[in-house]
Image (cartoon, rainbow, N blue to C red; front, side, top):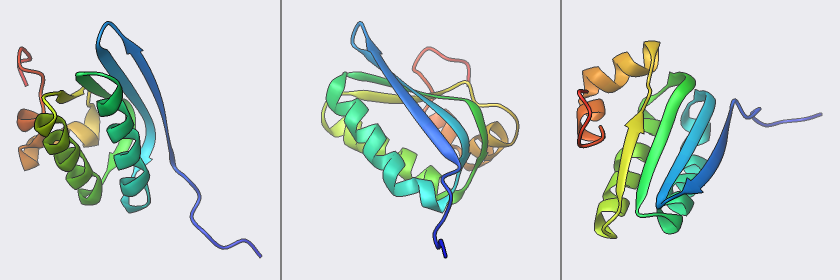
Length: 111
């Protein structure tokens, strides 16, 4: 008998010209929070600018919001930046309502 939670998300990280782009895919919930924190920390360690691409994320919960805010703080502490880009639908609404989209928007974006 198999017990456990099926992973509902994936990530891909690409680094170019001092920017790490972390593309996330799927549904991000409590099971994703800790491993996602590790993915974001690895990106912060690799580049001074991190963009988290949320275009293909269909769901997000409060534990993941906390993960984003914590990663932003760690990035800032090391002189790096972390921004959320391309959120759509439900994800954009949740990030907007909580104020996190504005907090973690790129400095020159209109969000």
